[in-house]
Length: 573
Image 1 (cartoon, one colour):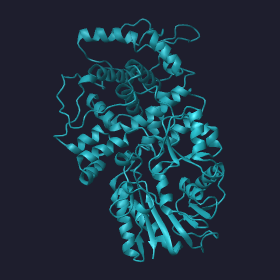
Image 2 (cartoon, rainbow, N blue to C red):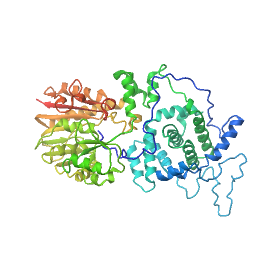
Image 3 (cartoon, rainbow, N blue to C red):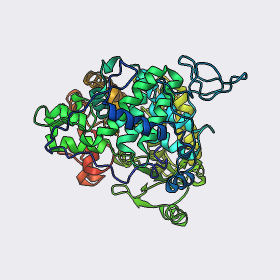
Image 4 (cartoon, rainbow, N blue to C red):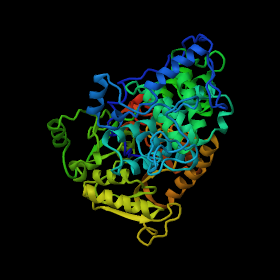
């Protein structure tokens, strides 16, 4: 279960409206007027003569703009927008008689900004030099590898290359494109004449980045999104490809009020999958389990921007003291519904640079991720094993509930994660955690291999389908077969936990998944193999609205406004 979303505190309020409404899911969609689709196989956009004249005139004003206002802090951008003036810039590339274009440099030094080599980018230029181009770079890497989106974004925003505005824009574009990729591709595929699947990833993601700004970020002018996309394609490819990108995006802009959406009557799985940008296999499962309306609400919740939730560290401060500090700094906050020392913030930029955070007065953790430690109910002098501890939020939460007494043994396979957890525990002032690099299935470390524990937390590796709002890339990287493979790992780990537990001890099994195969099915399999265990009803430890009919915690984003999760308290008789 993931507790940390490093970029959720970035300020995107200046970029997007307070609420972006998706089309109503069961509305009747009428066919729009006939749309002339740009042919990406040809460098020129074929249109009627009158349209061509109008577009060329608008391009002189719009596509030639270098848009310095978008590269400045928000206040400068607003000043420029309010003035109504357009920045001075070079004329657009026009191979049909534009005298400003020359195949040779205009002077001996070769310093001619109008010169554009079709195969080489200008000397001294940087390909990935702004928020939009970096977004293309990150999205392409996520698509090609198993890299984590948040880690790639965090690497870029920790440099001095971007100002605060561009860092926020980068974060918003990357998460937004991943969330809405399927809907974006629906439109791009319709306007792309050719095989969209064979389009190169860089060009694909350039178009996605531009179209996301056009459809979802209404405070960014359409011409700015198009111009930046075209200029970037010139740097990485040829003028022909830039012309195709330019023509395709402008065609969408001209017809965006008449775009054709899929209809529910033909195929409700495909309809909901495209409208809420999820793969069909997920939507099909959710409709079968919850019904269409609930499945639609769940998918919609997964597309909301995640809220920032903090856990107050009661070892170093009190929630009253922390709330007073928020009031002094005019930070809007709200106490969480299910755990009273958790708090959600409306906005807090650069939280990792905040002095109170550095001092360990609070840490980032979703309320759903705090429920397993509450369900475990640590008591003074308990000896507790956290079998799959990284990134360490649950271990530090357990240590906090112990009040600095007792002992927590936090196990993980990887040295880098152990170091990260040690740093976090040190920041929080926690001293009763022993970190162990080992395999939880078969502990061999001398400190633990012969120990028996009072309580064990198994936060098992899972599909992560409960945290899609924080990690939107998961939806495109998972298949149903992955869930089946993970259930075998989960069952093995849970059965291994038995050999480390004292008689009368407690195991809490938890995931950040909403899927039955990883949750109740694993617990039922365990109880069949271990008849000396039973489920201890979770309603004794948390609010009953979080507890399912079997007595286990089960949360859903669209019902509880927290991440999807599961936790079962298993007691040894």
